[in-house]
Length: 399
Image 1 (cartoon, one colour):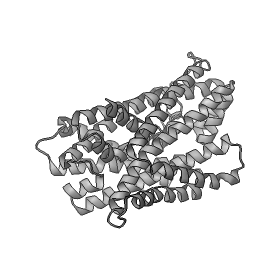
Image 2: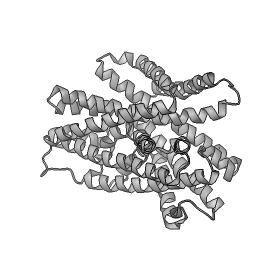
Image 3: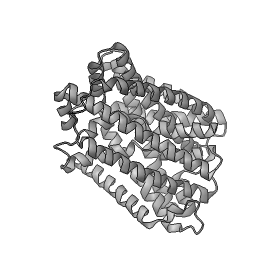
Image 4: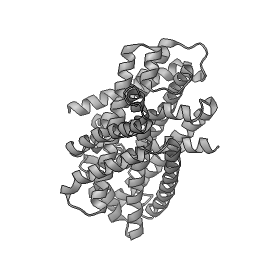
C-alpha cells in the first residue's frame, strides 16, 4: 500500500504541473461545459493508452523506455522514433517547468525582468541537484509536496467560492465554434495528462505487478482530471465574476501564466490567500519536474552507462544533461510556456499513442495481460485522437 500510494502520487504529480496553470487560460475559449467534456474525454483516452504502454512493458518482462520497446518488438526505425520522441518530450517539458518556475520567482521576489536569465540558471542548478537524489527519496519528497499542494489547492478553491456568482457562469463561449480555439486547447490539454515518461521507472519500481500498476495509473491519472476540473472551473468563474475585461483578454489569448497568477492575487483580498496562490503555482510545477526529471535521467543513464562507468559520475552526467539544454531553451525562447507545452503535446501524441499502438498491432500478442488492449474500437479512437492533436499543433506552428 505504501508503494502504491507513492507511485500513484508520482503519476499525479507528473501530470499536475505547468499544464494546470495554463489550462484556465486556454479552456476559457470553450466555456465550462465543453471544457468538462473535453477534459473527461482526454482522461479516458490517456488512461486507455496507459494500459497499452503497460502491456508492452509486461510483454517485455521488465520496465523499458518506448525506444527500447520499439527496438525489441518493431525494429530499429521504430526505436529511433521512440528514442527521439521520448527525449524530445522530456527535454521540452523540463524547459517549460524551468521557464515557469523562473517566471513565478520573478514576481514573488519582485526583481527586474533583467534578472530572469539568472533565475533560470539558478532554478536549473537546483533541479539538477534534486535529480541526484535516490528514487525512493524522490518518491517521499514528491508525495509530501503533492499532499501539501492538493491541501492548499482545496483551501484556495473554498476561498474562490465566495467570489463566484453561480447564477452568472460562462457555461458557453462565443469562441467555442471557432476551430482556432480547439486547436490551441487540444495539444496543451493533452500535455497536461503527460505521465508517459515514467512508465519504465514505475514498472520496475512496482515490481511489474499487473494489478498494482493498473490501479496506480487509473488513480494517478484520475486525480489530475478531478483537480483540473475543479481548478479550471474555480479560476475561470472567479475571474469572470470579478474582472470581465481580464476574462476577455483570456479569450483573446493576450495573457500568460504570470498574468493569471497576478490577477488571482488581486482578486483575493487576504494576504494569506495570495501566498496560497503563489504556493500552489510553484508546487504544481515542482512536482512535475520530479516526475519528468526522474524519467529523463533514467533514460539518459541507459545510454551513458556504456561510456561512464562509475555510478556517481553517471548520475551527475545524466542530471546535468537533463537540465542544461532545457535551461538554454528557457533563456532563448520568449514567452515559451504555452507554445512549448503545445509542441510537447504533439510529441506526446506520437510517444503515448501512435508508436505504442503501432507496436501493439504489429506484434498482435496472443496472451495480453489486459484484454482491453485488443479492443479495435478503442484503439481506433485513440489513433484518431492522436492524429487530431498532431494536426492542431502543426496548424498552430504554421499560423
